[in-house]
Amino acid sequence: MEMAAKEKEKCRDWYLRKLIQFYVGKKVSQCETGHLRQSSLDTIKHALFSIDEPLQAKLALNIRPSEFNGLPENTLKHLHSAYLLLKALRNVGVSLIPKLKRKGEKPLFIPAFENVERMIEVAPVRKKKRP
Image (cartoon, rainbow, N blue to C red; front, side):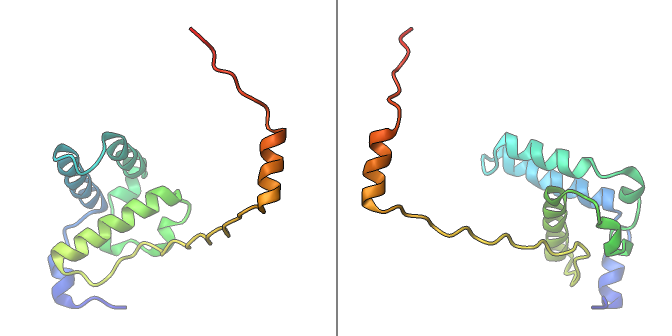
C-alpha cells in the first residue's frame, strides 16, 4: 500500500530513533501517572533501545520490512505499537512492521472427577516450615 504524498511529507523527518524516543517518552508519562508499571517500562526500553544503531539511524518510513527480520518478537511488538502511535498522531496509513503470528490457544483441559480425587489422594502432603 502506497502512502499519499501528504502523509510522507508529515513523516519525512521521523527517523526510527526519533520514533522510539517518542514512544518511550509516551510510556514514561504513562508510568508517571500510574497507568504503566515500572517493570513494563523497563522491558519496553530494553526491547527498543537494543535495536542496532544503523537501523535506528534510518528514516522510519523508508525501512524495508525485511530489515526487521531477526529482531526479537517482543521488540517487534513494541515497534508495531510505536508505528501505530505515529499513525494515530500523524495520520500515517502504513506500518512497516511485519504482523506477528497469533499463537493458538491451548485447549482447556478439565480432568474427570474420579481423576481429580485420585490426584488428590496421591499428591504429597506439603508441610509448612516454621521459622
